[in-house]
Image (cartoon, rainbow, N blue to C red; front, top):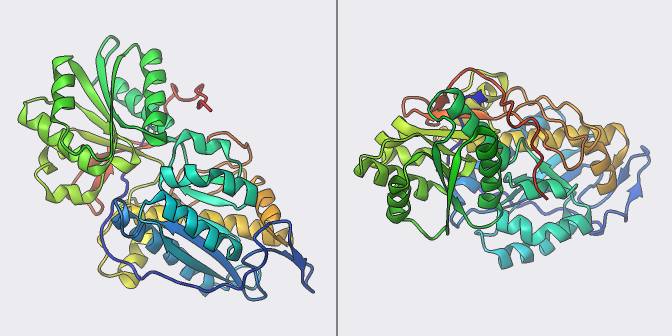
Amino acid sequence: MRSIPFRGLVAAVAVLSVTAVGCSSKASNSQSESSGIKTGPGVTADTITLGALTDLSGVFGAQGKIIVQGNQLYLDKLNDAGGICGRKVKLVVKDHGTDVQKAVSLYAETEPNVLGFVQMLGSPIITALDGDITDDKVLTVATGWSSTLLNNHNMIVLGNTYDVETINGLDHLVQDKQLKSGDVVGHIYFEGDYGNSAFQGSQYAAKKLGLKLRGIQVKPTDTDLTAQVTTLKARGAKAIVLSVGPRQTASVAGVAASLGYNVPMIANTPAFDPSLLSTAAKAPLEKNLLVMTSIAPYASSATGPKEVAAQLPKKYPSTKPNNSIDLGYASALVYAEVLKKACADKDLTREGLNSAFRELKSVDTSGLTPTLNFSNAGQQPSRETYVLKVDSSVPGGLAPAEPEAQSKVAQGYQSAS
C-alpha cells in the first residue's frame, strides 16, 4: 500500500461570488467565435466560469471552506500565468450547508452560468444531483470517493474510491502482521453511499485475506459510540475500520482507550480531521489510527504539496496546515488539465470538455495524488492509496506509515455498481 499524510479542516475563507455571463444551460447550445473555438455555458470572450457547490456552514463547513481555498489558490496561479485559451478562470461558490433540498435549488440557479463544477461536496448532495449532472453533461469534480460515482461518466473522481481504500488498508495491516487469517475485524460505517462503498471493500478484503468481518452501521447523528466499541471488544475484534466522520472517530478512539481495548484502527478519508489532536482523543489516535486516502499529505516532500505549503501562508495566513487545502488545489489542477486539452481541441463546450476529459490517460499532479487515468469510463482512476499515521508533530497531523507500496489484493477488485 502507499503511505504519506492526508487532510484536515479548520479556518475561514472569503467566499467568492462571481457573476458570469450566462449561456444556455444545455451543453448542446454552443457558439463559435472568430478564433474557431466553440464555446458553451459559462464561457465568454475573456472568462471561463466554474462552480463550487459546497458546505460552508453545515456539518462539513470547515472542510468545505478550506477546499474552496485550495481551489482558489490554484486558480490564482493559473490566472497569473495567463489563464486558459486567453481567458481568466473564475469561481462561483455556493453554500448548501449539506442540505439536499437547498443544494438542488442552488444547482438549478448556478448550472446555467457555469461550464462545470470544480467541487461538489457531500455524497447525499451528489446522489440527489446525479441525474441532473448527467442530463446537463456538466463535468463535475466529486469531493467524495463513493464507488457509485464511477457510474456517472460526467464525474471526476480524484483517485481510488472508499472500497479500494479499505481493501488497501486491511491488506496493509495483514502485511504489517497486525492481522492474520482467522482474525475478527470490526467495521463501523455510516449508512449511505460512503459507508456502503467502504463496507463493500472490507467484505472483499475479508474474503481474500481470510478475515472474519463484523459490520456495525451508524448514523452521522450518532456521536457516542460506546455501545458499538463495547460490542466489538466482546466479539474479539483485532482491528476496527472506521467509515464515519471525525466526531465518531474521536468517540471510538476515546472509548477504546477507556476500556483498555488497544487495537489498530484504519479510517477512510473523511473520518479524520487534525482538529481531533486538540481533544482527549489525541493519544489513542496517535497510537492506533491509520488514515487511507488518495490525497497526499500536506507535509509531503513532493513538488505539488510543497508548492501548496509555500503558497498557503501568503494567501490565507490564518488557515492551519491540513490536507483539505491539497484536495482543493488538486481538484482545480485536474480541471485545468481538462480545460487545456479542450482548448487545444478548440471546443470549450460541455461536450468538448467531456471528450477532452476521457482523453487524459496520465495526469501528473506533482505528487498531490497518484497519477490519474481518466480514459476508462467506470474504472478506478488509480488503485494506489496513501496510508498515513496520526502525528501531531507534523503540519496537518499525518505522517507516512511506511514507504510507498501498492496492494496486490485490490488489483483484481471491481467496484459494485
